[in-house]
Image (cartoon, rainbow, N blue to C red; front, side, top):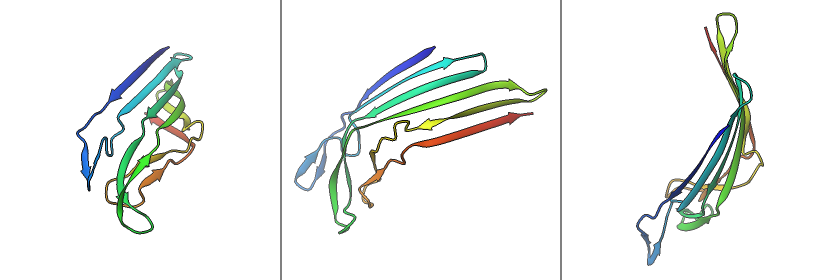
Length: 137
């Protein structure tokens, strides 16, 4: 089993917005990521990845009026789980696969969008299931 822990801090210069100085516009000041990876057999493994993104402010047009403004996006956490197989022999060919769940706990959170467009924030897509496979021959 192996794992990782990562922390990042950003402190860009404040942005002038009208008469207001805004710290960390479009940038989350703190981010934490952690994960574990475990091989269950020589060819089958599992991984769990957790990410926390700090709150931030974003600039965008008001969806109702089209007038630009500043909107706060709350901090959020998402968790992803995957099961994967690698180099599984199939009589001269091999296969790799992965399947899992993104946003395991179906958390609702909002992400910033490029400045000047509407809406001010994009809602997370919710829980997603995925399957991928590659055949090598």
